Image (cartoon, rainbow, N blue to C red; front, side, top):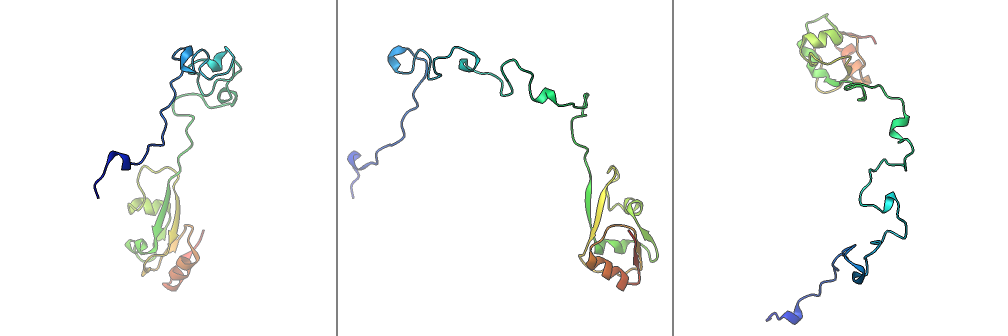
Amino acid sequence: MISFLANLPTLVARAKKRLGRGIGSGKGVKSGRGTTRHQKARSTIPLHFEGGQGRLVKRFPLLRGKGRNYSRKTYKYVIYSEQLNVFDDGSVVDIAALFKANLIEADAKSPIVKLIKKGEVTKKLTVALPVTQSVKAMIEKAGGTVRV
């Protein structure tokens, strides 16, 4: 089939009306901002502006100073049960032992650790960390104990 200009689809999108370009444009004078002549009729105002009243952001007591307004970062780690096989038989597995075995990054302050089942535990260990029920059963089956 031969395509002609008449067969092309019509464009539905309209061009955006330009504001403030003279009275004859239909959107001159107040530029669609009503009849007011106040701050909100001006070009840009800050999002937090409340008409001269104190900002909501400033009303809350915050710790002032560099880096004080950020939340305290907590380091959360998931340790898999197969990773416990790096420890010797009869050793106590706690956060300090995980640091020594490089299972937790050295710069982590107050890490939160939980043991999750993946693989098998073959060593007889004493675990002093939060564990899932399946890991607890696996450690006890291998001859170890779990204390939290």
